[in-house]
Length: 297
Image (cartoon, rainbow, N blue to C red; front, side, top):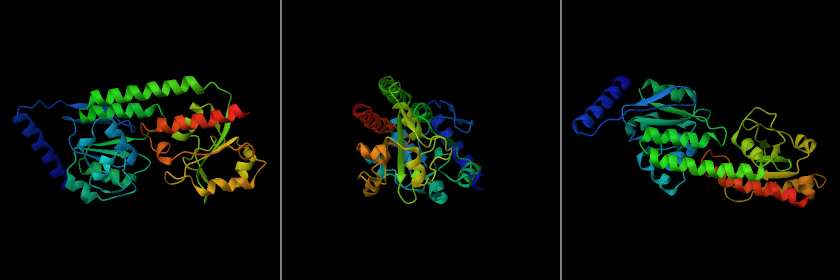
């Protein structure tokens, strides 16, 4: 029944546009599930189901079109004023339905599949994104710009991102390799595996993720395994913009090269763990930190 209502509302919106004399220009992109997302006209009411996707929508020039977001969608500041429709892993379907979006942007591995399936069954167009590499970020910005009718802004943002990425690649990727341990959390000890954005950034900077062989996105590891892999640098994230106190617990192991040479660093998690244009800020900081190791060796 709800799906039928949704289709009727979409039809009314389309007819209203035609009668108003405004041409309805269909737009279409392919999402990360390989599905074609086709809209009769660019979306004007968008719900974003991940903070990173909210950032990308703003970067694409579609911020004013977002009517719903999930918790922790806090960048840019304007995102904090948008209606919250739950957490990324616990959505309020009634709240989403009440907003009557003409496009929902979802996070493939972050949003439960059951919720996405229900939203699709209700008739909502759902764009599924799973950006795993830096190069995928400008592509998603461009696609979101197409779906939102903000192509010019999105293309400009995409080009700026790509230019900066190419410069970092040229500056650092061919430099001598440095072994890196990236620490997401302390208890339990969590790192980044080889199938994730952070691993891509480490490689960009000419580093080698000591746990790149792990396929999980955020695998748990033991302190013993870190010591055995003997990283030259340890970079921590934590939960906010403050350097986590637990980073200094590695000082108990002075034989570790990262400790003996004073290479314990911190980068705010939002600059590395969100798949957004700001990831290049995090990448720039990481590349400089890794290069410090080279300069001191």
